[in-house]
Image (tube, rainbow, N blue to C red; front, side, top):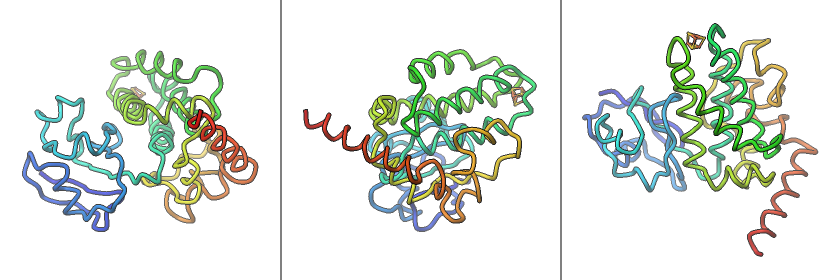
Length: 247
Ligand code: SF4
């Protein structure tokens, strides 16, 4: 099979592999960098996993099913520990919400709502009980569209909440993880095209921020929601979080 290895690797590319090749071998071929904390298996409709939990997992549908994963589009993306998985997921969910024709309820209402929830969570500025709201919404969407587009987005979102559970709890308490704040300088890892103008995200919390200027050029976070006042608020939240961990 053909597999794409990307993210925190020095040799990203498309590799021809045997079905059943372990994740660790694929990452080694891509010359994975130190400090990778998690991997996204299967592409943007795939699932996040802690690397240590899946390093020996064979890239095969049968074996991956046991841990709730699938080779999907054959994509494997390594996430550096210095990058926030919730933030990356929020970016992708915004993109996916922007890509449907909006003809079915889950896409017209559900995906934009979930993307907005994730944006709030990633920023550490939730409105109300965001995790409970996400749990309810993620449970309501699957199987209700004319195609599986919403199901794939839900799978990605749910896996992020599981793989980055401790960070999700901290973000929900308005204490975003240090990786989320470093993301302001590092920029996004997962490549995302520029959204349609007038799409559901054009006026949202990301407008003028991580989406503008493309996913790589100039750092998608520069000038975005982490500049100035937001950065100061993030530093304050980091202090509170550190204080909480000491107590
Ligand atoms: S569920 Fe599928 S067909 Fe329906 S609006 Fe979404 S992407 Fe289009």
